Length: 474
Ligand code: NAP
Image 1 (cartoon, helix red, strand yellow):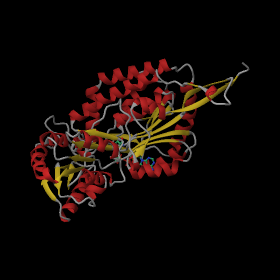
Image 2 (cartoon, protein in one colour):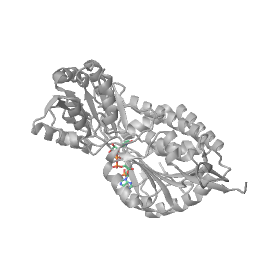
Image 3 (cartoon, protein in one colour):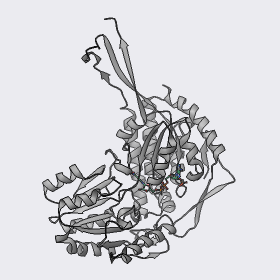
């Protein structure tokens, strides 16, 4: 595919290959943009921001464009689902699911385009405020740089592009180099839906080569980044004075209290720890289990995880496909071997077939082991025993991350203690850490980032607030 740069579809002799992770076959190529392309994009975006903010692209127009885009996406669900699965490796049911989710995200963004407004401020409630009339105006940030990760190559781009356009910005999208095709398809659809070419550019190229220039540029007024903690940290240091949203990684904990229904827990963990081969930011990673039910829980979980059939992601029978790259399966294998060498116990799965890692349950995990402490981002859970809810919460919170967490219990006091004390942005009672709909304010605490996504909340992140004061005579 070509990139959409400065209002044109552009090819370049230098390419990046996009590969199907299952067999490493090349499914397409995309241009490898460089600093000169980026300069062109930034100069065009500066002008584009003015076009997008103009009254002629009114809230109503933006609603219409995004609505039409959502309709087109819905009509191309199969094609988009296939593109997602082929480039990313998730099983086709998940690819279709992501494509459907993306429709909701764009539809939700369209709805928000009609709801962006300021408010009157009662200035006369201040002792010095008599004869003053004040109100706020919400205005677009201008140029938004949207940098996306590989793992949800369509929906996470929609979470940035939808609210940015709803709020009247122009966007420069930088998709992950492993999975750029879905974002380019989205760009085509938005243009087909009537978005002025000034509204979007989609630039492919190595983040390591062009990322610093993009995020440091003063013409960019807002960065919305989803990706690893390491790159997020680098972007924050490079960005300078501009608005930034950071959606970063996690090693999400789930607490299993002694009164939990273990079959329900096992079914939930098998769903929330292994989706997209564990490559989900809110994947259940650490399962902290009450000692009283520890071995019963492992007994319930083992067959459910062993039933997760692996294989080609495009085969309807596969439940878990390849990881995004074989090197990622090698890394997961290394971390799990390291844990087992340190005294942990492999209860199910483990080992790899090329880029596929066999869904695994690792028990007796010491919290200092890498599979507990760092973000595993693979199809395995690490199970650790505890005695009391206080100990469980201390273990859960003993992490630099804080994106999502869960607890299984029928005891409302325990559930509320968890809700108050667990250090994570999204908390689930009687489900694993992986659950999300777009109506939620979604985002992390601590090193999992800051700022919220979900269209209603993201449009606030994509706008600036101006305060207007009328100094009246009467
Ligand atoms: P990544 O390596 O951090 O890459 C993310 C994006 O940043 C890619 O587009 C990458 O481009 C780009 N990039 C690399 N270096 C850059 C630089 N110096 N400046 C600007 N951009 C740069 O993350 P990933 O491996 O794709 O995704 C997995 C991570 O994302 C995990 O940590 C996961 O938890 C996190 N994630 C978080 C959420 C959330 O909502 N909190 C959701 C999904 C994923 P290249 O591909 O060209 O290197």
